[in-house]
Amino acid sequence: MRPVAPGISVPDTKYKKFALLMTEFKADSVRASDTSSNTVVSTMPACEIQYSPHLCQGILPVNELRMNVRRCVSSSTLLQIGDELDSAEVEAIHFLCRDNSSKTNIQDLLEDINDGSLPLPFGLAEVLYVIKRFDLLRKYLHTPKAVVENLLKSCSTISFSYRSLLVGISEQLEESDLESLIFLLKDHMRSGGKLKNKTFLTLATELEKMNLIHPGKLDLLEQSLQNIHRIDLKNKIIKFKQTALPDRYNNVFGVPPSNQRVINVPPIPGEAINFHKDSVPVQETGEFDQREEERYVVRKETMGFCLIIDCVGNDASLLENTFKSLHFTVMIHRYCIIEQLESILKDVANMEQHINHDIFVCIIISRGNDDSIFCTDSSSPGFSLDRIKYFFTGKSCPRLVGKPKLFFIQNYIAQGDKDLDNMLEADGPTTVCANRPPNIPVEADIFWSHCKVEEIYLQQSPSLPSLYFRFLSQLLNDVEKRKQKHLLDIHTELNRIVRDKKEECIIYQQHTLTKKLFFCPC
Image (spheres, rainbow, N blue to C red):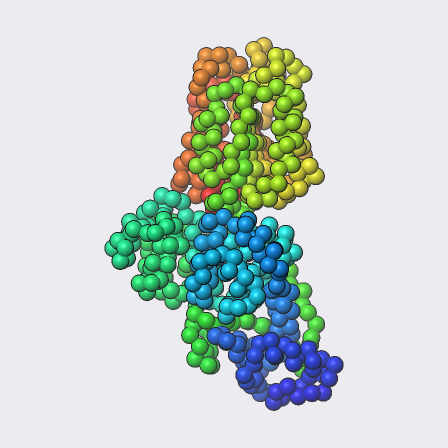
């Protein structure tokens, strides 16, 4: 046995591992006694850690996890990572490192984060996690987001948690929210609300310079979010105050609160120090809050990809404007024949850029019959609706696995189609499922909305958008509805509106979504 501190001994075979552990944490002192309430305290640069006397049970998994996650990558890899970041993500990384670096070049900053040149309590993996670039975590660091989440839950500094909180708020703010915040806070700033870059993080930086916000001073921001009715974001600040601020542990070395780090390790019965690694189940999610895990991850700058195939010509422009306003990349094909449709779907399914988007939307407007569309071809059998979805299943399009895939179909049924007549109730329109709905593949994360209406309505108003897409666009353009209602609630309201208009159409919806989908960042 080798003594490592008064009252604590470690078997010789484990001593080297323990010594390496203590070197990693740069321990200045270790204190322990026989009482169960005592703690072992070690200090690191600008932080304090408290452990139970059986510290090795808890330290080793965290230490090994940190070393595994914070592996350095090559300069060429850093260059590739930098090339894949958009301007909002670059700004977020600069903001996360603001306490430690003033470098403006993102490649230089990534290099410092990677090689440890800066005194940062976090690494490249944690940065990519906070900006929700889980694809880069997997692609370049070969690290699942759940592993980084586990590390952050175990040993995140208050300063990093604070900056991560503000980055998260920035992602979820709508442009109208930001305008309102700037207006409310302009009298507090030297610039009078005239920001160099009109972003929330620029606003937060200005408030920090005036000492109006910091980890222990968030009342002004909290009240401002209350005033613009963003209670969801206000609650995030309240939760941060309750869980992150240092009001319940002992600051032995007088370290400033913003630089403290606390790792809670529960007492473990027994006398011996145990070096085995505990298995901690962690759900693979981008949020710490359990309630947030019920939502699909959606980022503002790369919300989704929208494919619009308009073979009629009256809806594409309206839908393009709607989805572009939601930060979707939009691709439009007009007046295609069936042969072209299959080629388009295949090409889109193979696009590499899906990995950068959080939602996939496919919209098709065409004449057709009960279970097929004709495109601009003159007759049936047409293109089976069932086939459309299969181009985007996990097997056919692996880049969309785990992401919501939404299909909106407007089908104008030729006059005399008996299937449509049979589906209409005697007293008017209906929004129930059709007798023969297309089969959704047995696969998660698919949403299918199909509107059928008689072709005569198209002939009566050939240049006007359809009722179905007109009101869908109206609902999606309503900022408050997007914040408060998820997709299924929005679709329910769409059904009600269409039904009230007394137009003889059928809308049915099927889905295999596993979480709630909001058309606003989370």
